[in-house]
Image (tube, rainbow, N blue to C red; front, top):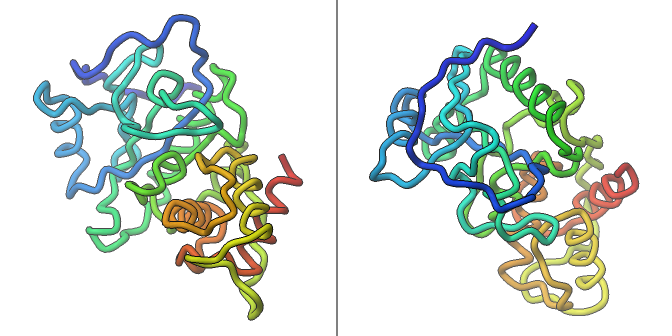
Length: 243
């Protein structure tokens, strides 16, 4: 049985690039007080932003842009070498106050709808599990949504995306801002190999710190600090072994 979906057309979309596959699914939080306020913004012709879907706190789903069209949700971003993420992706906004709103939990009824909607989307398009991503994954220096408290493990159990159990946090050597050398290059290579937009420069710069923080938000949420400790590096290796 298909998920019931209300329609609220947004004017904020355009054509996708010719012959571009739809092969990325991006999850966001709205960062606003209510889903209705978010929908109003996403449908405003003055805002120049939109998404394909909004899932409110009660689990109701509203479609704003047809899947075959290019919604304006990703902004300046990249994934797996793709720079025009909007042209290749579907965006889902999940109603949640976000970091500025106190990091409220995602209600069970909302998560059930997110799971069902995502499952339907990936069944229609050639979206690989590793390309089910957070907004923070594709724009790590700008964005932090849907946040480290979003339940990616639950989504993976529903057959959407990838998850490995994070390696426990422990004392030991770390890589951090200002470090240089082959171990930094190896970390950058592994992050880029998964899909993150990072160059292998051998320098732990601000971009690397932001990408590590994004990785932690998604895959090692117990500690999000941008420092590549043993747990972070080992979890990344497990992830790459799985995919």
